[in-house]
Amino acid sequence: MTFPADGYHLGAGEGDSWWFLDVRYDVKIAAGQTGNSLTLMEFGAPPGFGPPRHLHEREDEAFYVLEGSMRVVCGSKTWDASAGSLVFLPRGIEHAFIVTGDGPIRGLQLTNPSGFEDFVAEIGKRPEGPGLPPPEVPDISRLDEAGRRGGRPSLGPPLTLD
Image (cartoon, rainbow, N blue to C red; front, side):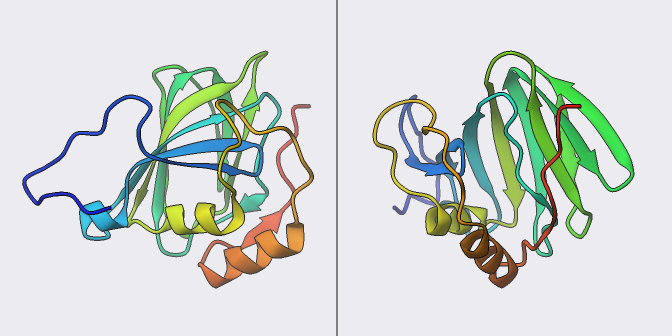
């Protein structure tokens, strides 16, 4: 999709959607609309979900929590982030997160420059309905290969809630 250079509007419930691991991503703005400068996605994930420890070689990443909570590790720092919190993860630093609390998290993920949406599309699949995907065991070798190729290598296991 291409939008006019003088701006655009995306309504509630609109955008390109993906189930990626146990996460739902709704792409709000991406490379094609921003000249590759940034990607903004709304995301939702269940309690206990967390990706493998990894880093982004090419992009900075930020999470803004709308509902729920998460624990985030970035290098030697650890933060607990709840609704209204922002976490910024600079490129080149190992990081991970885990959804904490009793319910799912909902938030916004910003990457700069854009491109993370391509990784989500490569590994993910189109939603079969509203809401979060059913839990499933990820294809780790496929995830690792796509991550390495895109400058997002996995570096260790996901965080745990203990």
